[in-house]
Image (cartoon, rainbow, N blue to C red):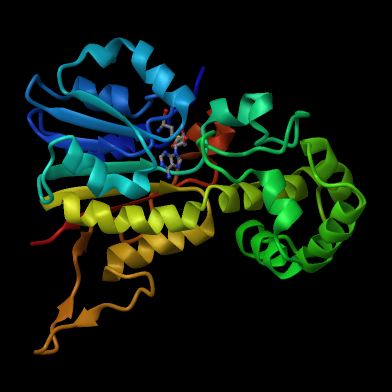
Length: 305
Ligand SMILES: C[S@@+](CC[C@H](N)C(=O)[O-])C[C@H]1O[C@@H](n2cnc3c(N)ncnc32)[C@H](O)[C@@H]1O
């Protein structure tokens, strides 16, 4: 299976799908969310599905629902949402619902040659879009020690980020990083706590940097807000505390600091009505069936005028 959709019924409910509405699935992956959205759309409804990965595009092309007259697949980073939607004929303020289910798909993690997983031996790649220039090996071989420390510390919450960054710099002077095995071998000497957790944190941190995941998310949230119609829903599933904070602040305040602005008269300006005061998390049953759902948090906002 390409990917088991996470928080599926909760996302569909949050989107409040109208058969003739226009919707966006910003992270198509295996189409696990897209398929039931399309099922609810009539011939006049539209689903614009984004993914930057060519495997997701190939997967979309062979899906039975690709025949739906309202299905439009856009192979692009979702950070260019507005530009791409306009090119596809959608006006700002015309979209009823936008879903993003962030991060990587199981297909990406489980395909050894993509280099996302410490479980397989492969080139250290980790690009979601294989046409991007910078791979994980490039990051490890060219970043300064301070930048590597920032990546491991901020994105991976790696406790000994400084020591690890220093070890990376020393290691690459002897021999540049090329494979997942090179990184795993170095990490084995640095592990703090459980091995699998440590390796997951290091690999996740690199992946987030390679794909500029927080930068893309911020661009996406700005564009998504412009594209939504009044009353339209923004539904975002995150798997990392940094991403969750970005989404939370944006929905609360319309900026990334989380402090709403005041207008000339002192009225607080909030672009969204918060539908979820606290994030929705998967039930124990879903986590049991799909352990990759365990860190998911879903937040929903409804665009005000
Ligand atoms: C968690 S999976 C989505 C799974 C999908 N909801 C499903 O149930 O099948 C995330 C997908 O989003 C894509 N993706 C992640 N960040 C992206 C970005 N900035 N732009 C476009 N696609 C992105 C990945 O390539 C991956 O296929």
